[in-house]
Amino acid sequence: MQSERSIDPSRSPFIKQRLAVMYSGGSLEEIAHQVEALELEASTFKVVYVEAEGAAAYDEQRAIERQLGARIRGKAEMRKPQRLLGVAYAEGRWLFGDCRSSEAVWLRHNAKPQHYSTALSTRVARAVANIAVPQPAGVKAIDPCCGIGTVLIEALSMGIDIIGRDINPLAVRGARANLLHYGFADTVAIGDIRELNGSYDVAIVDLPYNLCSKLSQEEQLAMLQGAHRLARRVVIIATDTIDLAIQEVGFTIVDRCVVKKGSFSRHILVCS
Image 1: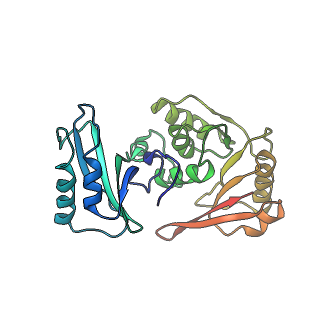
Image 2: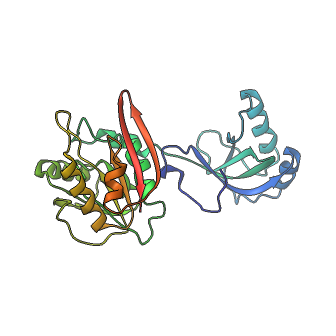
Image 3: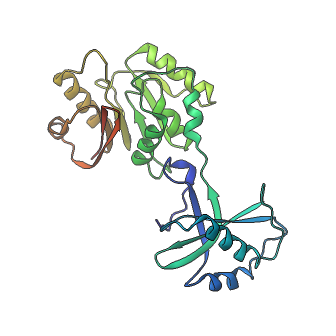
């Protein structure tokens, strides 16, 4: 996907690399001619093939890397280059530029000291935080059912201004321990979504789920009404289809998906 926005690839669990396009051309030879003018200012470099459209064979990828690397003035370094450069083929053109690889930040967050068996996976939590706050600048967010802080940790690690609340004191204690473990400020407190006040740009609401019992319709509706009072835009995570309740409190569902883990499904709904 091509975009005018510069996004840190580590924000998303589904992006491997970002290519900041410097040169483009209809053929590799055209790109090779352009990279001859590249100024590296004594930095070492490495050229990598970035898979975009289709997948070239391994030997072909390495040949392309060598073809372009041979035309660049500078010292190649395969292990720890100071400048990582990428080449990709997309929409009928060859693209070349600085390449940045994603770091699997969310994987490190699996090692948090406190866990819930029904908590979102860190990968899904990171995706949800991205959906809720695609551009963090100036956005105030709240997770009013934060549990042990799975979403909070992912959001905070991406620079999102977010606070957490939960009715369960044990959950709040666990969230604080997890935030401290990763060096984040304590942004959590005890609070009931049905009684919270304040105004936020977005709320992320993972409706509580218990293996032994489910929320009653009355409880669910009251929680959704609390979310509607807190934010103009809400991302809701539920274990069942709750469209009628969402519409009843005044939300419109603008996008949705279902995430499955075995036979267990979570509905992710973007509402405004």
